Every structure is written in structure tokens, then in C-alpha cells.
Image (cartoon, rainbow over all chains, first blue to last red; front, side, top):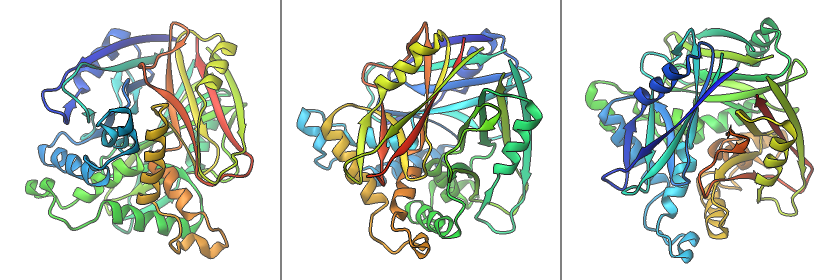
Length: 137
Length: 137
Length: 137
């Protein structure tokens, strides 16, 4: 069994931002030398998500508006009694989910034609971290 | 470490459909000979989901109506500027999530009594693909 | 490849309850002796969730109200024709997701500073089960 672990740091310019990190996942795969196994891609923060979907600017805008409709910014969340103002970002992280598992087969990411790994920042403008961990053989 | 990868093809008759694929997951398990490990079951499309829940027709109907309430068909999504009409299916895929990990213990799917693996088609009537990948020993 | 599987039993006092099970996940890790790998933490019921987020009482209350807003208790779900009354708990399980994968690096849970594993009970007051399965080396 082989394993390779890398950490990706992202500091977005906007509070909410969606970044295609598929190239970074591929880099970890190639570094690992793994031919068969899984790669976990997981936000290390509780106000961000990782998902697999389309690299199309329209759907990214749809995802942003949809997440903000279902988990709106603004309301006076109980969490804000701590002084925080990012209650919505916690709920968006749960909605989108904070992680995906990418299958690796014959040394490549075993994705369908349109699948891309995205980091979804819901409380940005500061340095955040993502773990990319490949395990296999 | 052993690994076995199979692809399941599904072409639904209806645009939205929910299919119990637990028997197919078990087939991959038996083929793999794995006693301890994980099986990833993951849609290879960005308009479909994979989830674990009940094989009961009422709850399936509830899931369908609920997903369509939270990510409704129809609205003029930004994604539709590309000529697509399936923006809702992308959001439903995110809501339900596109994958699950099934634990394997002593050579069997280590599920509770009511847990079944479902493929959730949100944009069907064409050939779609699911990866079932078992890794373990 | 090593693997260790433990089952955690929880019987909540309230119908809905959120329990930090990170210490139990760490116990399984230490028992396993694994240095590199993954731990699957997965509800074995279809009316419960497992998620990673903050150990802060306000956000837990927010998560509870948010889940009940998006998947409300009460409506006459199709599932209730079976005599069940927990349709909302099935949908909440899908919303929150029933499982997470925890990365293990150098013998510890490889989490960011605020990440904690929670069991989310949506239909409690009876004995329920969670699988914690560590696989690695």
C-alpha cells in the first residue's frame, strides 16, 4: 500500500468563490505513483465544500445562488452569538458536502467526461487548506 | 491490496428514476474476493446521484418531490445559456450527493438492516455510467 | 493492509440530537495502529446522518432548525402510508449525508483545527448503530 498526502492552500479574493482543483488532484496522483486506489479531497475548514460537477461558468453561478437561497447569508443565526457572522457558510458546507472520493484506475482519475473537482469557498479572503490524500497501490 | 472496478450502464425510461443497485454492488464484491475494505459507488455524470436509503416506494416518491422542491425544474438557470435545459439536475446531484462508500467486513456489505444503494437519475433517457470500485484485502 | 471495525451504539434522549463522536473515532484509530489511511464513519440507519463541522452549541442549533426547515417534520409524506411517521428523518439524512471519510496521516486524524465528527440523530429514542472502519497501514 502506498500513500501520498498533500495540502493545498487557497486564499480567495471574494467571500464566495469556486475553484477547479482537478489539476492539483492529478499532480498528487502522479507524485504518488498509484495505479489503483482512492484519492480523498477534503476541505479542512467547516465553512467550505468540495464537490464534483461541471466546469461551466453558468452552472457555477447557479450553484452559488442556489446555495445562498437554501442557506442564506444574513439571518441572525445562533452561531452569531459567538461574534461570528458566517453561520450561512457552515450550512452551505453541509449542503454541498466538504469532501469527495476520486477513484483511480490504471493510473488515472476515473472520471466521466464532464466531472471536475471543485473547491467551494463560502467564507473566504483568508488562507484556507484542503487535504488531497491518495491511498492505493 | 486487491482492487476490482466495474462499470454499470443505466438508461432510464423516465427523465427522473431511482434504481436499487445493491445487487450490482454485491456482485462486484463477490468478484473481488475482498474480505475487508471499501467499495466506492459513484455516478460518472454530473446530473445523477448515488445515495443509501430505504427500498420503500413511498419514500422514493418523497425523495423525488423533495429534490424537485429544493432544486426545481424549470427556472431559467444561467446554465441554460449554453443551450442545456438540465440545470436542476446538476443541483439535485449536489443535493443528494453523487457517491457513497460502502464498508466491507468479513466479506459482506456492512450495512444496517434497511440500507440499500440507489442510483438517482435526474436527467435520464440516455445511457449513463456508474463506477463500482472495491479496494481492500 | 490493516483494518479495524467497531460499532458505536447510541440511544438519544430526544428525537433529534447531535453528538460529537470524535473521541470514539480516535479510539478506533489508536486500536488499529494505522499510520496512513482512511476511517469511514457511517450511520447504519436511514434516518440519521454523520457530518464534520463545529463543536459550537449555536451552530448545532442552527443546523437543527435548518434541516427542519428544508425537510420539515409533519407533512403527510408518501412514506407515512406504511404507518411510519419519520419521512422527514429520511430526507434530513440525505441532506446532511450519512457518512464521512476521515484521513489518517502519521497516526492522527488529519483534521483542520475546528473539524469534529458529529452523529446527527433525526429519529431517536431507540438504539441506533454507527460503523467506524479504519483501513490503512
